[in-house]
Length: 390
Ligand code: KIV
Ligand code: ZN
Image 1 (tube, protein in one colour):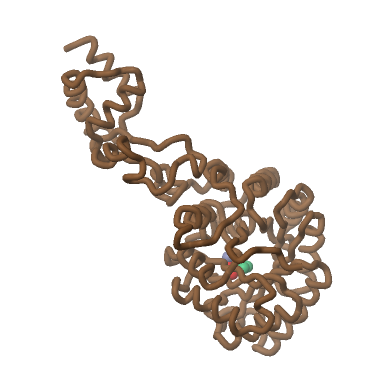
Image 2 (image 1 turned 180 degrees about the horizontal axis):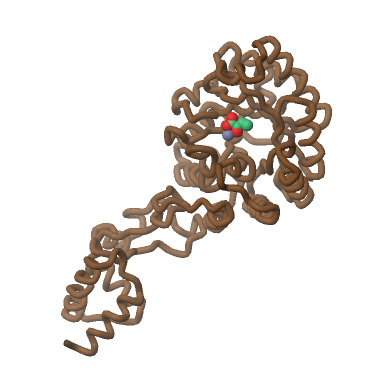
């Protein structure tokens, strides 16, 4: 069964609970996994990769429970290229309303060395394991791990074999974050053009962020014809992480003029799930992280604050409400100007004449020089001192 998808829609495949959880130290409890899966389903993610069922009893139980509670999202489990892994995966995901088995094998020269198979033996293994999975489930994803470092002729050959054996989604992983946008687009475009049967299946992109290009590479792959983007909340994932879901969703929303594809994700739920994933994984979000960082909608400098007070679009390309934030944060600090101070004081109930503001402004600057950030409490104390006089 191929997922029904129109040409301008991109499926969002979230792997926070599988690839994200593989980050050293990011382990989540059973209850936390169920909670995150429910939030992903609720926000409109199309496919949730819930875990790696053969990895442990705990992983199996989590994938099974997520499958049992599933709503609209397809629930997917990961399996290596052997029947035992695939059977265990099926046992866990088959409880979902819409189950998927995702099986993979490393196809690059670096990865082929590990199972000690030559190219023909590996091709045979791919045919056998994808056929085996397809006999269990009609929604099969296959990944040639380290695809971006796999020889072109071999990649083309094995993708063709997986399609013939029954794969319905072919995922092209940039496992070590090695590709660049032009190459990422080109690879998908050429596979779609040159592999027999490619027009009947969905191509996916799965990028890692080792060179900081995961989002750019994923969007380039979409331009090349990929219709599924694999990503995680906050970009959680091994080493430098995976493509960040929030970046893909917001890039497609904000720049729909030049990235004319849409997702089903409700972007107003982004901030909430970002905070929850940060808490349960124990991986705090960096302050300047795109979309979900503490500073992503914060402005401190006088020029920026002044501009923002006149019109938000001077320094903001998206509205805070679009990602589930109440408002822009005008942080008061030593770079802030009078306009921001006046506006904050007004919010706190102090409507000052120009000469009063000038006095407070001098004291505010002295305080801001001593403190990194001036909070509402500090301003109230400043105003109390002001009214009591010298
Ligand atoms: O990065 C990768 O290659 C993976 C595969 C298992 C798809 O996560
Ligand atoms: Zn990965």
